[in-house]
Each structure stands twice: as C-alpha cells, then as structure tokens.
Image 1 (cartoon, rainbow, N blue to C red):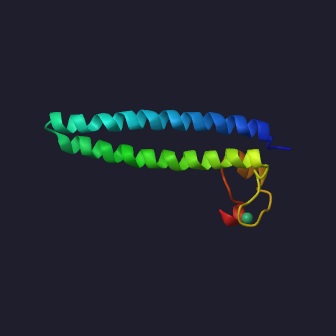
Image 2 (cartoon, rainbow, N blue to C red):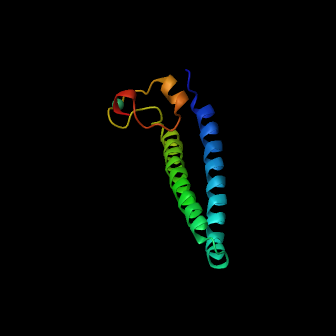
Length: 107
Ligand SMILES: [Zn+2]
C-alpha cells in the first residue's frame, strides 16, 4: 500500500502544527497592528499589511480545516475515500494532496 495511514497521520499532524504556528504568528502581528495605526502617520501601509495578513490567515485557516478533517477521517477509518462517490482516491493523488477529500472525478 502506497499510502500508509500511520505515515500520512504523522505528516498531516506536523502540517497541522506548522499551520497553527503560522496562524498564531499572524494573529500576534495582527493584534499589534492597531497600535501602529494610531502611532504612525503612514496608516495606509499598515492597512495594506493588515489586509494581506487577513487574506493569508484565511488561506491558512482553510488549509488547517482540511488537514484537521483528514486527521478525523484517518481516526474514523474513512481516509482515502471520496466524499462524493465513496471510491478509493488514487494513491498518487493522496501523496500529492494528503488532505484531499475527493477523487479526481469530484475534485
Ligand atoms: Zn468521487
């Protein structure tokens, strides 16, 4: 079997930790931003950074929720099956996208 659930679980867990760490860093930066806004003349720059951080944080949260879903499916024993048709997802696809929920036909 090309995709061993134990290996995938380890990979996904470390990806989850990485995403959580990056989100925590972003949130820390974001909460500091309002002070910059009040104290610095160039508030447009701060606003652009805040928008950029918020966009990045949203992307990271999406990825994190996919990874957490995948971990839950490993625990439930349903990992590697398409959520639409229930067919086994191709191992090469799972290797490329470990958190995917759909087979190639339903991507
Ligand atoms: Zn499918």
